[in-house]
Amino acid sequence: MERLIGTISRGVRAPIIRQGDDMAKIVIDSVLAAAKSESFEIRDRDVIAVTEAVIARAQGNYATTQQIATDVKAKFGDNTIGVIFPILSRNRFAVCLKGIAMGAKKIVLMLSYPSDEVGNHLVDLDLLDEKGINPWSDVLTESKYRELFGKSVHPFTKVDYIAYYKELITSAGCACEIILANDCRAILPYTPHVLYCDVHSRARTKRLLTAAGAKTLYGMDDLLTGPVDGSGYNEQFGLLGSNKATEDSVKLFPRDTQPVVDNIQKGILEATGKQVEVMVYGDGAFKDPVGKIWELADPVVSPAFTRGLDGVPNEVKLKYLADNDFAHLSGTALKEAVSQYIRSVDGDLTGKMASQGTTPRRLTDLIGSLSDLTSGSGDKGTPIVLIQGYFDNYTM
Image (tube, rainbow, N blue to C red; front, top):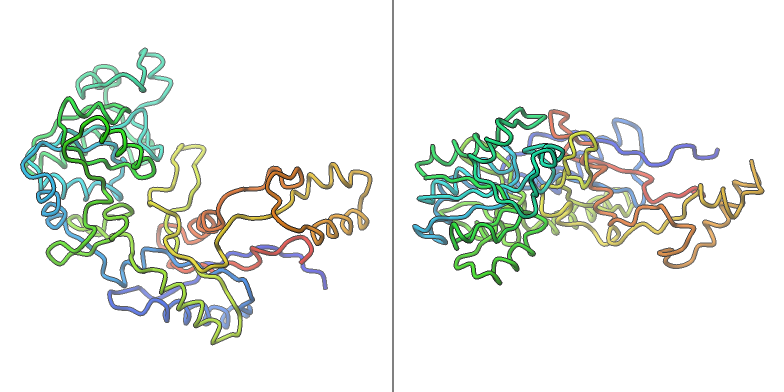
């Protein structure tokens, strides 16, 4: 019988993960149990995706605000710290900011506007036009911002992040001044000692501030790159990718994740004889058209994946073929012609008209986004995602 179903994405339930758990074994056992319970078979080139959060939990990769403060104090001493370009997020940055403030005497907090790096808005862009403000050149003090725009709350959380972040800093016993600017160098008249908190533009920020003469310069990926007073750590990303665990601690992005995916792949092969692909995923890489929030607050979508997930899709656009090469055909003849074209594809289709309009993004970014949307961020209890048929095409 002809196959009529393409890609299937299943959220797989797993036990609540605790520190010390064997994540590879849990994932293998959970996927095999789900296959038995739901009466489906594991196939070659299925994809098993595991959220980074449960791996970090199993590793016990946590840090307290006091441990963050100790690292900040060691790096910046008693200098006034310019904390620039943070994400506006209670989950992603607030606890980190609390720890940073605990390790400082004064912070000049510089927020980008009208939105942060991932699209959380402080003010509507149209209001900037109305007030004659150029966000690329104008530096606003907190009082000037309030004079122009008053109180501004996040459309989803209803939080006034300027007031919220200021309260976090001052409640830690740290003096606070707030400015708004989009040129990282605008912080230097206030202090040459800078902690840059942007995620995806951090290399540029570092380059510009170094050239402009910053005296002390660290990024979030420079904090907790090693254990501090017994803390968790991440050698590559530091505090980037961390999430709130409690009011006084964060869960860091997991480390040493490649052995986890390799062991899952090996275990599934031994149990089923099937060669699956495995990846660890964090935030998906997509943008909400309503809230205008770009979901990717993690430093990467996938910190580890098996070799078969390297690269980008190599696909043709069916509607292009139907409307151009085979516009004269219909029905069975059209289907057979398109199928034969797909079978005859040899080599990289990049730049070919038949592939125009396909998605030239990395497989791990695409599959990570699908996995993030499947598992959700709430109480579904499915930190494992099994994707079948992703690499199939019209002929399979």
